[in-house]
Length: 313
Image: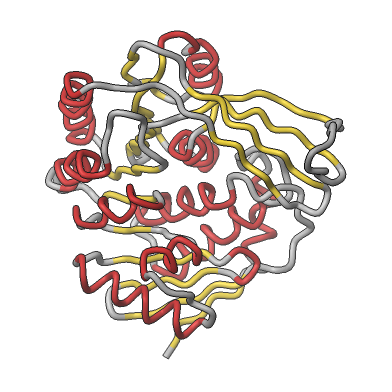
């Protein structure tokens, strides 16, 4: 039976993605194509997990004013919808994708929640977590939900006793680390921001990841490095994966796809090597397309064979 996977997106967005040859600041930019679609890190993770074969529940906070497109997506993709609807409109984020793969993001503010809504959501999520095999908490926080309150919510989810994968940034990441999730996935820039110093070598990244792990008692720290691959501190071991060079269409969703691969492998009880290979493969494929998802299993199988994985001494 497929594991039950719960992804939590506290601050989802409608992503308005446009493609153009090259962004010109201070000028009129004409898009070659574009689309508006429901997104948010946890929702992106859920879509990839569903394609991999998971039984996926999605939850978090949605604005009442524009919930329809999200609900249509969940129904179309077979995602079990447990979002809490609150007053207001879910934010719209703009992503401008240039021909060379460079992405400029404009993230707007969205809904604002009060403590009553947060407390209600916490009870709702705890009930869902009790029935899930693994949880993914991903993305930023809405207005009204402070990093400290976000960490309190995460701590309550960790206490349920299921593996919690956590992927966030800035103050939400720093506060959330204190909850001691099972796995965190900062990229190299987010890890450097946490460390408060540049991390310009693999050795520096590894030292910072070990410092983060030991400070907060986190079992797994995965550091994504874009084209330079990924480093995984698993307990007291280090693993590295390197994808082939890809023709980049867009980097949007590559990190979320990696989190989905990690979640799938861990939920299946796979080895570190097998899990890391999958996570790297789905992330590498993500940069070759606009949007997330693994629609062709044959292409994924071919990519798996091209990922280099090694345990570091």
